[in-house]
Length: 344
Image 1 (cartoon, rainbow, N blue to C red):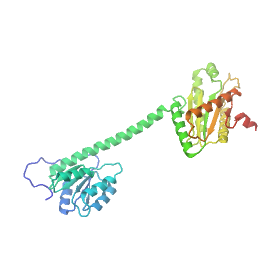
Image 2: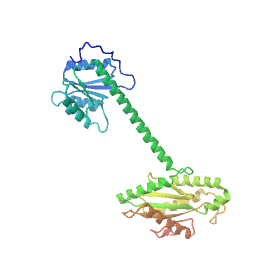
Image 3: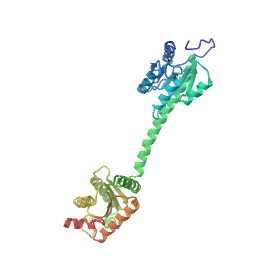
Image 4: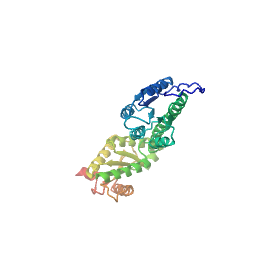
């Protein structure tokens, strides 16, 4: 008999609590025992029950349906239950399904072997209905707890991603802030070094912006910075192009896979777009609209290239652009600024 016929009184086994569907795979070669187990599981309220008389069929059902619990007989035709359990564990790839071994032998060695190959518990046949129910309820609680933990982990991961995005975004302009810029530039240097591709960095400074604030006030100054932020987002059309607020009225552009000539063409287009946008700057010594100056550095990174060296090189080029009259971009690598390029 598959279940104990002892006359000892046992409390009535209550069905499993309602909630998520609960499925069980029963692996038992004796048809009468398997049928009795299935009947008891149905009385317990198990929603889906899969049956297998031997190991290969059990593995197929396990991989196809991924049950919530496996009741696995140790003695099976062909490969035994220990082998089946081991194959199930190897196929899970990070998941976990409770496995309860069934055996007619109450042997400590069987228990040890079962745990070693990935089992979680052990039932001695004939199985008492109340004991089976207790095991089912315990495994159901563990499964529900695991589902909650997985859900909480996914929610925590999503929240961390949102938090990282928030702490790397400049609140005023909506561009990447200095923290995000540092991280992205470091990663792009590594990627360009690995792929052997050119990487361009531009540092930009709004010309005579202190005069803008002194004349128009900081509220208008903030509105101006927001408008420049929108403009920079518009010109960064490729997925990996990044516009960032470097600090104050300074901005930085990271342009992966952009050679020197392409960088200068990009800078010229940016200057023209700002001219067309025609943001009023009444007290600018350069005219009545806002202009910017920029320094460009382009390289195929090698082992000596790092974020600090690229920033220093771009900053030196920015200083040269200012020294030559502002309202231009300058590149040491090309020994040319955007004004010269327009003349040529």
